[in-house]
Length: 513
Ligand code: XMP
Picture 1 (tube, rainbow, N blue to C red):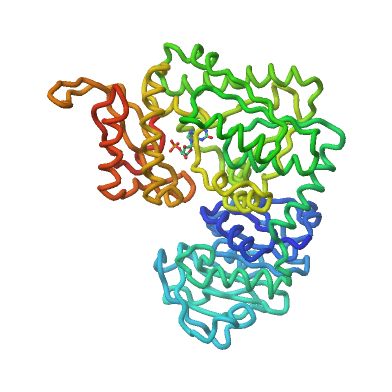
Picture 2 (tube, rainbow, N blue to C red; picture 1 turned 30 degrees about the vertical axis):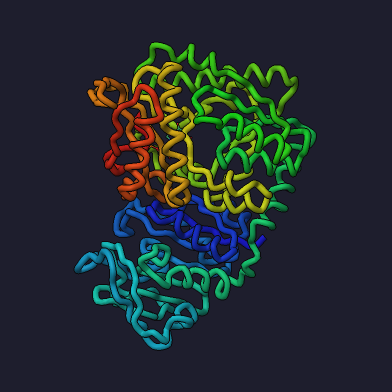
């Protein structure tokens, strides 16, 4: 298989390099910058990208790739720190920039721009995005300068005979408008990749790999109703048929009508072998009296594991646990990134594989979220299901502030159904990352008819986001907000006030708990 190797030196943009190359239908993987030589050889890349990173090659312990990257005879592209590595390792000079360059800059093409800039050189001046402290003072022997900026006399360098290229700017970010085309040009024309990587080819390849890994074993898969676990299950079902069993646990913390909708889609439309477990009462009992958010999350995780284990035990021998792990999770746990501080515990099924002594099957671990959606379409999963907004594992429990009771859940479900209906009616559901209701068990005074009311409050939360890591509150039209407020107060008993959450993330989180 044709593939590009991206060696990561810790840039916040490394994932974007991978996405841009995959958008060119060329498969690529991110590995730590310090990947050992034998593993690089086994990977057999058609080209190598050295990412940017926060270090300076002028520091003694700056991370470096194994020098084998320069002698495999495949093209190498260094971006920012990656370019400085090329310069330092091949005998050029790197120095601190006289003026640090951050943000937009103009790239001026020198001469014909060489092979790398050939498709773009006619423009002479190109907008680029810079973010660097060091710069190239003198390129290594054999290198020519293809472009410069005001503060970087060697902003693009190349050794055409060896196929080694360096860029001082970031082609992977949207602020370099022609950057995606440049990365496509590198992967296709310079590395010679055919651009044949599609979801159809991924399905074939993944099916082969799943069969090879699982053999005659049995696989259990926890379905949540979300896109990732559904796509995982459908892909596995296609590969191994009835060797797969799916378990869906109704924890009583789902939205109105959701458990039934999920059951119908998964079982009847998609034909998955599904065990449906009604554990509503058990979760409610376990949650009774608990008000602390982390305690709620941990309790839900623990009860889930218990229920799941009991169901698995009824199935006899099981060898594998299937999980919808995605590429960002894999990258986040790579050593260069380090462990970030836990804000909320997100592991919905924490510790399950270890406890059950099951081996893991993770067929989506190389894919990004939008690629998973594309895969879902390829596998024939209904669009309504694929376009679903994310829903947290602990469900309505983290949207019902304080203790969870059946009464509060019923109020929250009814209010949330209004939010869902109105957002959909306004055609906003696919434009928003999430929109939902939160129940605040705070009472305030109101007046309905001629009667005084004293009842709970609903907060409406709607956010726009790319990945859930950061988010902006959505500027919903006032008439949509007004309809939501009117309907909730009129239709949902025990609520007399609606507020709109205008906090972005950071500093707020998307969910309230
Ligand atoms: P926060 O509240 O941390 O949420 O800003 C970011 C995104 O993650 C979702 N979320 C979860 N997803 N299990 C999940 O699978 C969880 O425990 C969990 N908690 C939050 C949240 O809905 C938002 O999209």
